[in-house]
Amino acid sequence: MKITKVDPYYLRVPMRRKVADSFNVAAHVGLAGVQLFTDEGLVGNGFTATLAAGDDLIRDTIAGYYAPLLMGRDPHYVKQIWHDLYWSPLHWVGRQGITTMAMAAVDIALWDLIAKAAEQPLWAVLGGAKAKKIKTYNTDAGWLNMSVNEMTTYMKQIIDQGWTGVKMKVGKPDPREDYERVRAVRKSIGDKVDLMVDVNQTWDLNTAMVWGKRLEEFQIGWLEEPLAPEDIRSHRILARELNTPIALGEHIYSKEVFRDYLMEEAVEIIQVDVTRVAGVTEWMQTADMAGCFNCPVIPHTADGGHVHQHLVAATQNSPMQETVLPYGVELFLHPVDIREGWLHIPEDPGASTEFKPEQFAKLRVA
Image 1 (cartoon, rainbow, N blue to C red):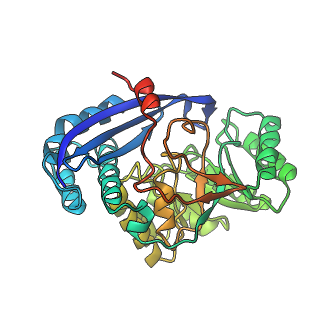
Image 2 (cartoon, rainbow, N blue to C red):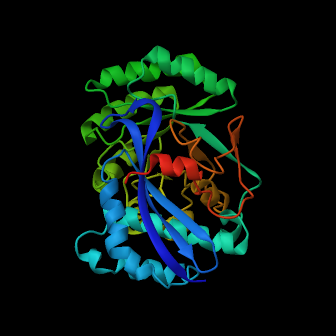
């Protein structure tokens, strides 16, 4: 099989409602990616996700620098292609962010082709490690721009639908307000529902030491991204002081940084995102490495869970998957199938990245 055409794109996908965390406000999601056409008639699709900023840079990176390295290649040599892209001339100007997110889109598209050629879902090609369903937790009810009443009302609806875990955002200018919001949510949903708290990097070490300790009384499942992701030292200090596990990975772009976190005992839950590291190839390496440390992998899912469901299904140390549903249900040909809080893994060939043609044409930015 040979790649005969490389078609980079980006989509601007409206959310059902505006959402906010401690440093982002968004009404749209950007999906920047690539379609890889082959001489066997198969088309692979891969994408990364943004909050509708920088999508043109990711698309142009694929078009200008990666496409020439892909033409005529056999997708089955995915690891060699990954190496060639990583050590392309772009290595001199960036080894994370735009370059790795562009690589993620390409790598996902390659694995999509491999699975389609095998007439198998991606999880089967990677080696199934799960039964037919995956436990999920729900993030969609905990946005920072929601009032406490809106959060608790929505969370109760989610719990009634079968979810047993929810996540909420914190990071208000005054941490006392965060504390009161968490206390109100825990009181409303009761003690039997898992409650995770996401800071989105806006605390410093002193704030995290004080308020992370205060939040322990609410039986927090984990404290997510409490500090800047570059600051491994402060995460190590915090992890040793708190009883609540530290989770992170949404803004880490390479397996080497995850290695350093694990070696420093600065993280207890790895949230590696396939759209942020350089694709399926690096995601699986990171998950396997975390397994060597007996560290669970519960990925951040900027892809809406479509690719991640295959990765989690193929990873023994990945006990659960995030669910975020503010966009995209109507966009995908095979949307994620979640019933009563459980994701039922697909049987369709590929990586579940194929869009409905009419939606793709409607949302594509020229």
